[in-house]
Image: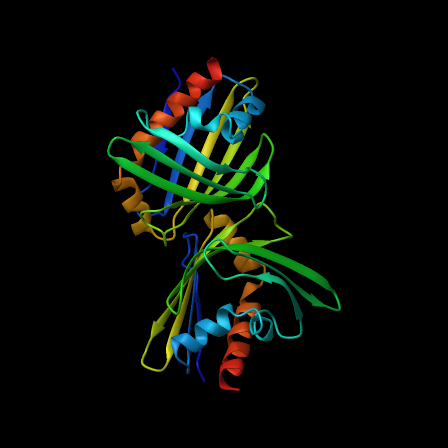
Length: 154
Length: 154
């Protein structure tokens, strides 16, 4: 089984998430950006995703909600750069923390039929990065990567 | 005369720009966000600004060009959070470097009739921050702050 690595070096504003998938960059990129597929894997297990908008083109926006019995969480962002099968630069905002924004660069590296996806997130400060880590984002990331693995092998 | 301080600590992805103005936060914020005023101060001296769009509301976009006899430079971004007279979070992209994006947080601190404006920019990496410094952004920043000073005292 492929492992997800989450790295957040102390004193930096970065979070790096690396995961390999047994599928080509084209297939992984499509699952990552197609609004018909994204709700099947993005977010913590046990929550449903209501995807309002997901326009993965330069300047396009996304907007979605994760819901379970205890409530809903809204997220939004903008795709600033999109290079098919290679790279996405997007912002990330959580409704519960509306003036905090992070910037994510996602790269899809071709390993010859397999793909290494590297998400590099930067926060406005070390403190806001630390707060994101403390919020328990790790579970959502691990669940998402595991669910995406399932989508790609079905 | 008020001085502009530009700080870029080695090994970090940050650039911090601090400048005080002899005007209230409301006046400085208006000059910072009103598309009728922005072309009067934003950018290096000696260049004209063609402001295509400048919608400083949450989710709004901006798009402008700086031109002189040697050519034109296009810029774009999105306002992700806007709190009147207090805070702006926006992205920044240069057409010449389309897959690089930086994230800027601008705060307007009330000093009692005067205002301290602090622009805190974060880049995806230390290397891209260093490249921005090496590009000569300092001149544009110093000129902009000096020109804004002039706008506020006219």
